[in-house]
Length: 280
Image 1: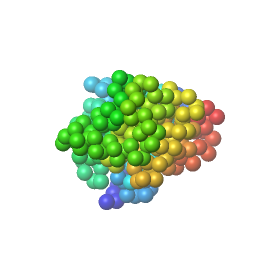
Image 2: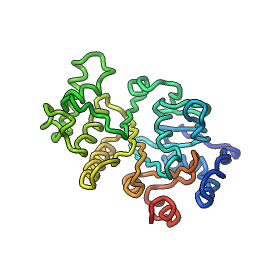
Image 3: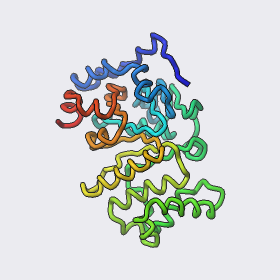
């Protein structure tokens, strides 16, 4: 359901702007309106964040974040180190202390659900940035672990077989120890394992981190295929240019606040974004 913002909704907290670098602080001051955020999601968001204040323990990292992404869209978060990009993903999935605001999926408030409930009931899966395969288990056993919330091991094995059909490269290596895979194959396995529970939303944290250049393209091809299948993807990517090239929507975070939002192409073409955040 479309939400029409009130006039006051355009003014969101900007108290941390002074902590950013001077030029980046200007971006925070000029942050996007909620109307623009809704427009980028086609005014029909699947995943929506409103006024999110969150952090770890008593430390506040995010200061009134708004975010929207539609079904089948991809969104990339970029910004300097410490801006709060991964904390946005952590907050969606239930890894942070949420002090204010809400997270909704299809209009359902899921803010206070724990990660298992979000995976099982809201169909949100998180793909961690760290190497999370079980190296001493086989590829097949790693996929079975993706179904740990299913009714029985038999259900998990059946779901894993369906995933294997989409990833013949992994199927060929099903009896191979995961620790012997290449970096790109391990990342592919992490993505495939997240698909066992048939999520509708994928939170992807730094998909290219630690990979050789020849494997980065392979990983993004996998993500492109998932988007074509209708998955919604919210990503943090250290290679900001690659992330924006992939994504329908781009957000720039600075000091825990949304500094800019636009299409991926628009942010790539913006000379200030290029100079301050893309190394151009």
